[in-house]
Length: 573
View 1 (cartoon, rainbow, N blue to C red):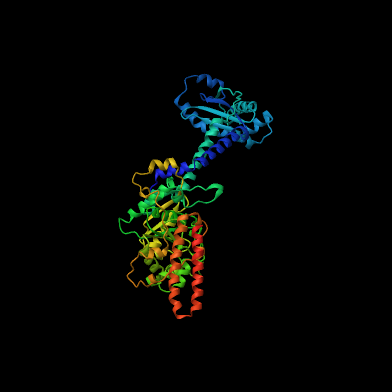
View 2 (view 1 turned 90 degrees about the horizontal axis):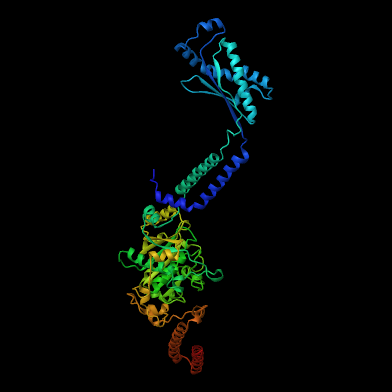
């Protein structure tokens, strides 16, 4: 049998404290109502009899035997005690008592009201009568003693019963003790509460702290992420690590970033797969903020939304999802450096420096085949050469197993578990599935933990200028936005670099997505980039003009000049 963890048992009991308090109050009220309102009071009245020296009915013989009680007399009386007890409750006795007192009950009912007791080793009989009326109880006890004494004379022809204590009226109910009744009900409440706590302890297998992750699952805990709060008017702010760099949640992601790097034992960490057991556990939220945390250390990061069914990264970063990973894997037959321009069509710029995104794309009919294909592995390999970190937003693995096979080919597989919702057995199931394909879970992140800012500050603290990586960035330095095309120029691929002679021009709606014009640095950079691309296009068109007539060449020149002027006007605005 599994050893009971007393600390966890106490924590379970503490978590159910309000339920236990309610149970205690309800049972206390029930005890009060039972004792004061429900119980019908009954009253006891007792008469005590003693068996004296055995006497017969002949007075002359009795006079000759006026000596002390012999040992034989005591033995006879002891033998008669149990017999007398049965006689007292016999129908002959009860019938005469009913007739004498004119009671409106039968013999069996009266017999139930009578209790006979005696003390071991003595010759004292105690007859106790219980009734709802104390006066009737006293009268019945007195009459039972009288009738019994007469019945003994007629049965045994002896007179050895003497009354030593007459029955009296007792106005205190025999069956009501308010304090005792409430205590009994409270004891039942405690017992019931203990059963409930044990049921929750045995059957509530949700993850509640980092020790559950390490002891029950056998996986390293990478950190605990507090439950984020809704923004103004209930809007959902998910990129908290960018919006508030000094908040406890941002510091949690810094800690997560550090723990993840060190979990690799200083091995080269390039790509990370983020999974969860079920949906709504915060997988996409963790992925986005983890990427943001890496990007703020001046690392180039790309997020791949591999959840082709319900991917959310395009919503988090506010970009279009018209084409993404599913379209990329379906349309590009071979993933290599010669197809960089084709891959570039599916890479989205974001409003945040150092972060690019490949959205999930249109929902395919065969997401499992696409995600586990060689093209996906080759795509990751290509992106590894361009970016410092490739972070893959995987799938809820206990619902769909798309990303399980992918775990074998990544440097780190991170699993997100929700506080007091994700069950230990669900995580163990995912762990076994990943291990079966040759993968391994690097660590688990416990999300939506009820950590207050004060409690977090006591455990982790960050003061600006104390060595934190994020604080090393120059605050006044202009933010430089680089496109995918800019990055690939910096990479020295081993294969043919024929793509360098080509120009990738992003679609206009990708360049000017909502919110882009708010960042002047970005707009200026993109306009400069477009201007250079127009110039390159102009030179190419001029070369082409050699083989066509002069009129057409002039037309092309005019169109190019007009487009260049339009760009310059937009740039000046």
